[in-house]
Length: 267
Image 1: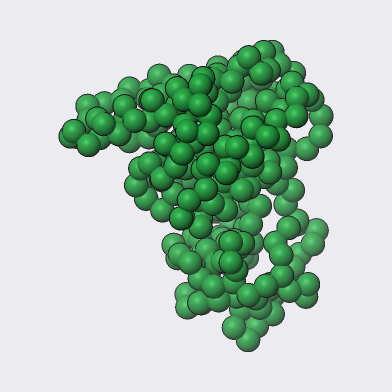
Image 2: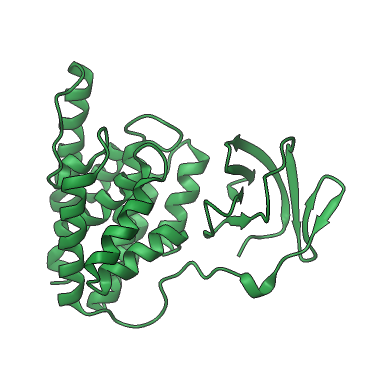
């Protein structure tokens, strides 16, 4: 639930306007982007000139206008109750890993789960890939906190690949907790604490992932994976991969890599 407050513009895109009140995020989005834990879906185009907005119990104040909420359309961003079946989850995970290996966009971190890496453009990219591989070994097998710190901020763009990967890894811990019945609070907190940095948007997304809060694309994919619905896994993976240049693919890679790396916790 978005908290009341005055939010200032952080970043503007054709389909998304991001606003912050301190470290709290609100995003105005078009119907094409869809619902999420901090998304307010606009019925129509986004305002072209807007530097701030106010959220109150009465609605959303944009300039001098008050837009009321449609409470019948409130989006529930958590997966919901119930313990998933481990065998189905394993099959769904295998289907997602196969899709990433075949279809992940170039430049993503999906080389970590079998996608062709392609030839590095230069020495920096080669070193970055090796850094990511070493970070994953630490994250999953030896030094969780150091691995999260190594991945933080790695890559380019508004949300770097390493941060998207860590969001997917936190989603994996939510799934593992549901599959195993374990309490992984300390583990999730350790990942989050060491993943937070100076990018407020990444920090907000990491916080949502830590709390098991997902946008519509992410939630749809997780439900398809846990149901072992292979055709729907591919449909949902394609939809999520269209999010950002590589953000969706990096999130899915983090999910798959973490489910495999922490398999002893749930299999």
